[in-house]
Amino acid sequence: MLVYIARRLLWAPVLLFAASLFVFVLGHYGPGDPVEVRLGTQHYTPEAAARIRAQMGLDKPIPVQYGRYVWSALRGDFGQSYRYQGKSVSSLLGPKLWVSAQLFFAGMLIMFTLGVAIGFYAALRQGTWIDPTIVASALVLYALPVFITAPVLIMLFALWLGWVPTSGWGGFFDKRIILPALTIGLPGIAVFARMMRTSTLDVLGQDFIRTAKAKGLRAWVVNYRHIARNAMIPILTVLGFSFAGMLGGALIAELIFGIPGVASFSLDAIFQRDYPVITALALIGAGSLVIANLIVDVLYAVVDPRIRYS
Image 1 (cartoon, helix red, strand yellow):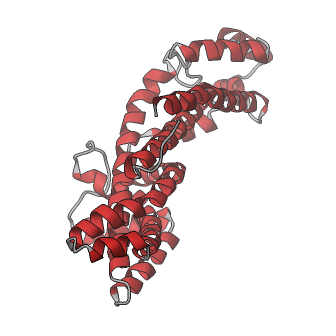
Image 2 (image 1 turned 180 degrees about the horizontal axis):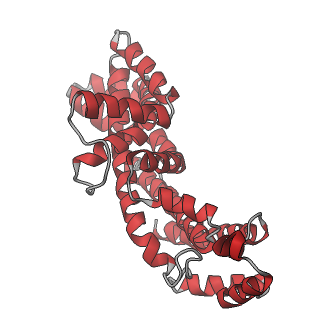
């Protein structure tokens, strides 16, 4: 297992290098000039632009600029923000990433726990009215986009019932995280519920389940130790792929609920051509995906003892 993890981690720098190179080159050859955006049309002159480019190091060849950026990034320095002069990208992104990470984890927790539990319950109730009701409800939840789900949740739980505040941020254990976490987690609940139901029905028809029941094992032992554990294997695969999809939903939820995460900050960086911030966000996103998929692969061996990595 340790050899497999080490081998996977050795590929991480290669993937991060490719992602950073793509974003860095695209930022310099794409439309828009950060110097022009910084000066504005009224104060832009070729002399002022040349002076600022020299100060920012943008007058150097692209390979030199990228080499300096990689060397600084290896030491944990993602450079200085073009928009916020004199402030490092790390100091600007750190607090906002922590806020977004808390919201993302809450959404993943809701999506995984409720989706797996609902799907497992629907499979055990196959043949009753409960099963098709859950499946139909999952399809409705999955079809609703975030910008519709969020206003409905606000009207229901905040305006009509008055259970939670409508906006703001108070941390992971604050009530204000409930609505945005539900907003990004509801579509995932539908996906996990359907996947868990299908996987559970497939496991229910296996011979070892009939053998376990024939031995006289208790129902909860058969359900949770034999059925649920084996049905979880396909769910782990979906968990890795859903990580990327939830990132987009989390950013939209942050904008709707006024959460001080990376959503508005990243949009401002794009419009202001703040390429050090954009590149850092791309590296962080790529690194998170690599780590998430590695964790999923490790969980395969934890859930299924038959899986061994060499």
